Image (cartoon, rainbow, N blue to C red):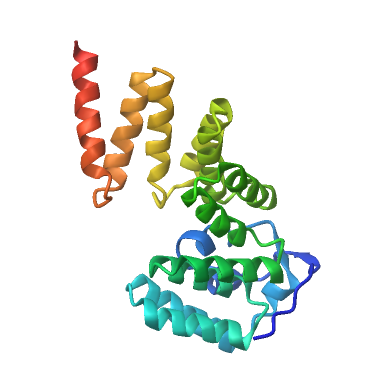
Length: 239
């Protein structure tokens, strides 16, 4: 498949259908309201958008093979479909095909370097590899492109700063992510802030963040550990 690369001109966002066309959970759903939109994003053909919607539906139903097929069809129809490439990356990541997921997100970055989600996708994999300098660079680039609406950009920037021991910045970005995450899509931010406050010996703030996590993520794999941690913290506060 031939993918045309290069910078594309930017236009003010003026297409009310773009949000529906590009939004599908996590990485693609976070940046649909970014302040600029490329010509390529406005020019997605209906057939490609339809395949994206099918892929999104299958992805939400955890039907990863079917979702992958539709996402690949979307980017075959329109190789400039940055959101399609990132959705494909999300699907492949969920299906434990990490190398292919990274390649898909790199394709999204190559076709539209001013679209934030590919940076978020690649920051995720850099964080998974504990490459915190790279994770910070990628997440901060996404943040520079969308400084007001993308909680994932703030989350990964905060996480990288935390691991790089830049705790003031980590707290600032973490609180920003928490504020933007009005639908509780990234409960991990509460654990990050809890870890930060534990390190800074602020037990009341740590307790609050653990409570927020337990309330927002009852099915998370870290829920029992967080509950035990909160119980032990509360016992300590009573002493």
